[in-house]
Length: 355
Image (cartoon, rainbow, N blue to C red; front, side, top):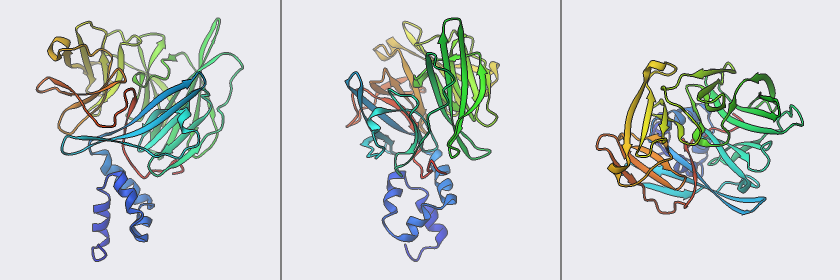
């Protein structure tokens, strides 16, 4: 390839999946230097974003009351409709004590399971990571936290949002703090009259430059946080009661979606065709239990593939693939898949937490 024009080399390398591209760093110095070029990094990210989504899986075993062991896996979808599941050899100290709470442009946001003030942003394939200082403590009262991670394309900034709920008797409020990756400090931006459903990946999603959560109090609300302007809003729902446990937020073909598992005989999928417009909600499809032969309550949409099939997670135990055209639902059998896991969609990239 020494005789190929530089633009051809760039075009070829930018099409490679992240693990193959990382191996190319060992081929020669020019290729290594190329993979550190910001223009190439964003070119590769843009191409990777238009391919079939991959998944980061994390499986956690509770050793005792104070110690967890976490293993990370990378699930790749290939053109042959097959999936492969491989271990991610990540070198973050004490990684086994962290859990993934978000993924954006190849970066993962990790939070310590026992101490939520310990937060880390990392790229599991370049092995770069940044630890963050302890968030500002608004009081010594009982606190529960909701944490989100998103990207501002206008300023090319990544931000962590921490919403702290003070649950003392007679005082139920949420204080909001924001940390821009690279700044290394937290900024208080005031209080909000919402308490978000915490920790569950099914209760939050990043889309259109905003984080979204189900609200626990007041109930039946979808609350948004605009990453660029740092303001909260409310997204109108499809006219159903979005209570705890039976509903999951998701993104389906680039659109905001809600999975409704509150029925005894079916699961309904709602999609917001035009973001923020209440009238654009449509019931995209329903999966009847008698149609598939078994009960699939409590599923969460993970992503849609280029062939139209939808990948779902059932009860943190099974990956399911659903074809809306044929209405066929099947289990995705993958060698090496753990028996219990959490999953987030992930685009493998060369983006580093330091920018």
